[in-house]
Length: 162
Image (cartoon, rainbow, N blue to C red; front, side, top):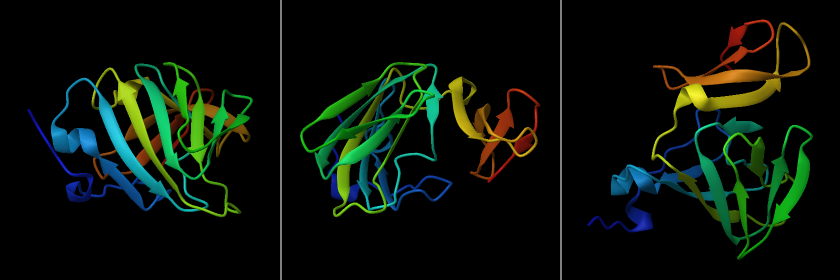
C-alpha cells in the first residue's frame, strides 16, 4: 500500500514550458500500470506541448474546475470539457488539451493513462511544423538525455529540439 497527499507531490513541468503545475502522482505512488498526473493550468497553459498521440496508451482527462479545450484528431475538432466531465482518447488518437488564453479561470484536472506508468517514447508521435518540409507534419517524439524533446519528421527525416 502506498499513500500520498497531493500537496506533498513534487511539481515536474513539461520540457517545453507549457504549464506551471503538473504533479506526477503515479511517480510518487510508484505505480507500474497506470500514469496519473494532477494539473493546474492558467489561461494559455496546456497539458502537453501540442497535438500528439500515444500508440501504446489510452488517456482520460477529468476536469475538476474550469473548462479545458481539447483538439481531437488530425483535423483538430475542438471539444470543451467542463467541471465534473471526462474525455477519453484511445491509443493512436491525436489529441491536445489546453486553456484558451482568453479564459476567465484556471483549470484543475487529472490525467490518467494506461497501461503503463511511463511513456514508451517509440510510441509517441507529434504534429508540429517541419522546419525542412514546411507545414504541419507527423514527427517521432523523443525525450533527450538533457530532458528536452527532439522531433523527427516522418517525411524528410529532419530532427530538431525546440
